[in-house]
Image (cartoon, rainbow, N blue to C red; front, side):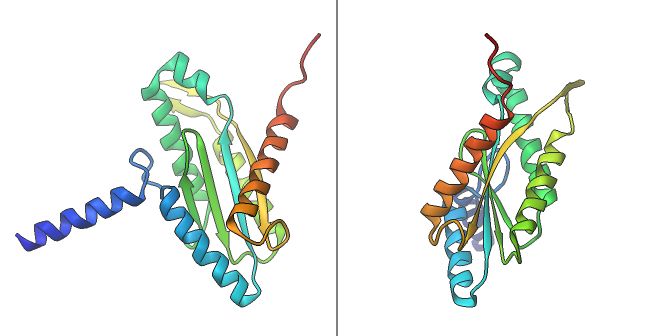
Length: 176
């Protein structure tokens, strides 16, 4: 009886801190980990990176192929991000098609760029869903502590702005 209650409690705790679809940490758990990583970076004069990852043209996937396919894409993106990062890093789903990655204790900006490149390449491989190959691309933005901001909010603003620049740079030019 007691063991059953304990199991239920830990299940509920997990659900409260993770995204139900992808199993990744949710915003609340991510914010906790970001706070811990920032405190450690300040204390040890260290660095960390924050990556924003946004799936390009996700709405048309959902609209034309249905939410079940959209969900499979989200699960696949989450799994591929997870494969590209270390045990000590945290990937989270914070919105519909928005993911964030925390890279604590990186040595240099190059390390963050390398991880971002790895994620972009991994997600760029076609997703095969119900026998149909789907091409998915992502827009990404990176912020480094302390270079681009000293707190979570400033880093998030920087990563978000960088992601929109990336999105704009990779959009085909308007004809006319």
